[in-house]
Amino acid sequence: MLQRDALVPWLTALENAASGLEVQGVPRKVARSQAKELLRKFGLAGFEDAYPHALSGGMRQRVAFARSTLASGHLLLLDEPFGALDALTRLSLHRWLLATWRSLGKTGIVLHS
Amino acid sequence: MATGLITAVLLDFTPLLQRALYPLLVASQAIPIIAIAPLFVLWFGFGLLPKVLVVTLVCFFPVTVATYDGLRGTDPELIKLYRTFGAKTWSLFWRIRLPSALPSFFSGLRIAATYAVVGAIFSEYIEAFTSLGIFLQDAQHSFRTALVFGIVIVTALLSIALFLAVHLVERLCIPWYFASGRGRK
Image (spheres, rainbow over the protein chains, first blue to last red):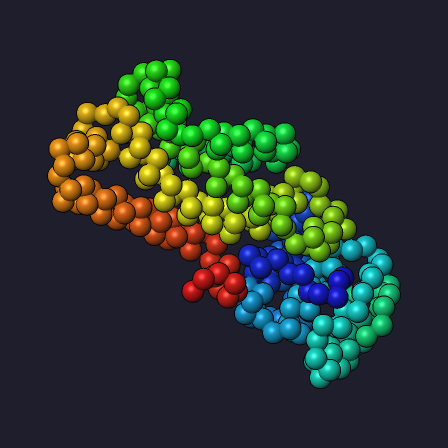
């Protein structure tokens, strides 16, 4: 996962989240349903069909995080995942990340902030 | 004209060849159309074909150059990210590079739309029975300036109509580009 959210502007939140799986050859339906589930878990239910420009910075990062989580194996590298956000959003996403982390069952390496 | 545009798009879908063809493309534009258009009539006979070829020749260059730049200008971070996810070259092209080149493609298409009318008028200048181009020539030769201006206005309106048509298609095809505030409102 990059510092910038690097979401694809012509895909909706759901399509973005699923896109990592889809390029790996996972069938669209499977990828979409997994992405939908994860987005709900990440507090983005109801925003599946929103395009990135309509989402806030924190939401965009969470979509990008969902995309990386789905597409990665057991190891997830997060390069300053919340570095591009303002201090308050970053704090709340930090708390959220710590709370969600255990349920993902992955090893994560966060490169500060 | 439509044939010209479609040909342009087809020509454009060969990014590998493009590097080899680029100098040739530029050379094709350096040849004055005035010199080559009568030759087209010689080679391909009377009728629609030489006219379509002239319009194609005029149109495909802006489309090709713009789309090429669009393809090359894809956000490198997106490419790197999807490579990391394991995207193959082909799926990267379809999913990431091609859509991100679309705004540039449409810029080229808008330029081409205005060129197309000029190209068509000019090709009709060379050889035609009933058309704006030959009508324009007749009017000029008989010093009917008012008629000439009339034809000029019709031509301009045609160009504008075509330009707007392309713009409309563009808005339908890439709404995300306009919605994200980067396109013109």
